[in-house]
Image: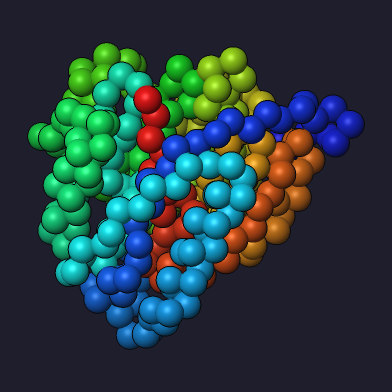
Length: 282
C-alpha cells in the first residue's frame, strides 16, 4: 500500500462545502437491492435519526453549509442523497435508478435542485446513480459501472457537461457504487488526490487509476469491508466510519484529519457518510 510519512505529508487546506442531505424519517430496510441489506434485521429508527443528526452537526462544526431535503414516505433510501444527482459548475445531471424501488427519488431531487437555483437539471436517458458513481476529482470526472450506472450513461454525462469522463469497472458486488470503493480526498485541480480499494476494480481500471493518480492511497479489504471508503473530504478533514481505524491512521500519515462519525444504523441500507451527502458545486 502507498503511504506518506508524517514528516513529508503536505499541509492540507480545507475548503467550505455546500452540502445537501435528506432526513431519514422514512428510512427502513424493506427490500434488498445490495449485499448490505437484510430485511430480517430490524432498523432502529431513532438511532438512525440520531446518527444522521450527528453527521450534519459534524459538517457544520467543520464550517460547511448543510441543506436538508425532507424525506418522502415510501422512499426509504432517499436518505442516500449522493445518489440524487451530480451538481457541477458546468451543470446539473439528474438520475435514473437501476431499481424500480428507488425510481421516485429522481424527480424529488431534480425538483429541489431547480427550485433552489441549481438547475435546469438534465433528466437522463440512461441509468446513472449520481455521485454514487460519478465523482469529480480536479479536471477528472471518474465514473463507475458494472452494477448500477450504465456505461452508456458515461457518454451521456460527457455530452451534457462538456467534459471528459473516465470509466472504471467495478467487479465486487459489495462495492456496487464507485463511492463505496474510492474516496475523493481533494478535488482541487491544483492537487487532486484520491484513495481507493484496488480489489473493487477490474485490472484495466486499476491501471487507469495508477496512471491518473500514481501517489494515491491504496487501502486494504479491512477498510473497504466496513464501507470505510464511503467518506466525505473537504481537502483536509475526512468524515468517515469509526470502524475504519486503519484508514484513519493512513489518512493522518498523509496530513489529513480523520473525523469519525458512527452511521452503523444507516449502513444497514448500504451507505455511509458519502452516500448520505451530495455536494452542490456552483
